Image (cartoon, rainbow, N blue to C red; front, side):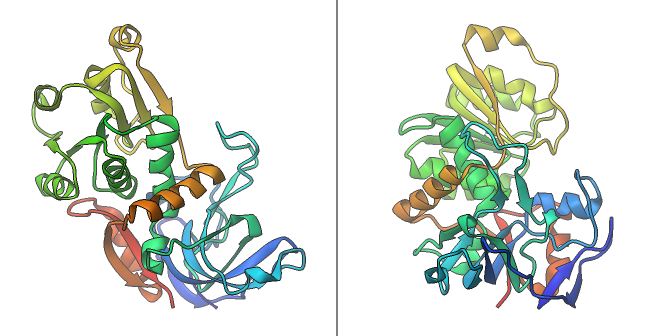
Length: 333
């Protein structure tokens, strides 16, 4: 099969023929139609991710058709149009993943290939309202946003929601999900163009966080927020407690802008604010996200589509976030 293989830190993705994976008894083989990239893949290529191993086929997000099944798997799964849940061994606790949990694309080969093998319980039905390319955009960013917004943030109709740093995959999903849930959504971005796109997608407004006193401008326009979703940390995180309403929930994942800054604890305890960390999502979160997407007829924002042969060109688009809005997808077959 054809695959995009990474041989080392800062090496280009190499397109080559490799063996089709052999199945264990509880696994299935998926013929991939599309895959998508996450910042995780970019960090792996840069050598700034834990547990590096080479060579590796990266890529945690994929959608396709079940081609073959292991001997302990129901053969009726063959031919199923599927989206792949990227995490193996989440465990029995909905509150957090087990110590044995691992993701596709590292340490095990992932979805930048014509075929991938996964456990049968990682197979879910492709949403009927989405193309394979749209479906492949969902897994990591989609369920991360869904869990942050609903499972951890407890977002409900009428809540006021702030999404800090809209434009990336998870941020754009959080925007779409919150709008679909009939929350009042505000956003921040470093790009006025992205703010305009978010407003066109249903946000009530937003501010550019590169402005001086951006947080004061936002509070003057919008008031206080019941749920705040952040994916960057860094110095700007210190302003979020001041923007939170009484009983507000600040949910964060990732740390692309730096570490957790010094925080003034007084507004946090006085307003009874919860600061909640999250990453990925459980199989239940994944199932609920897919149902929500079908019910609300949500179509992911896709920034660009490449062929598998152009996987290196695709990942290079992630060197900068400027101008991007949504996911980078690879069409495989």
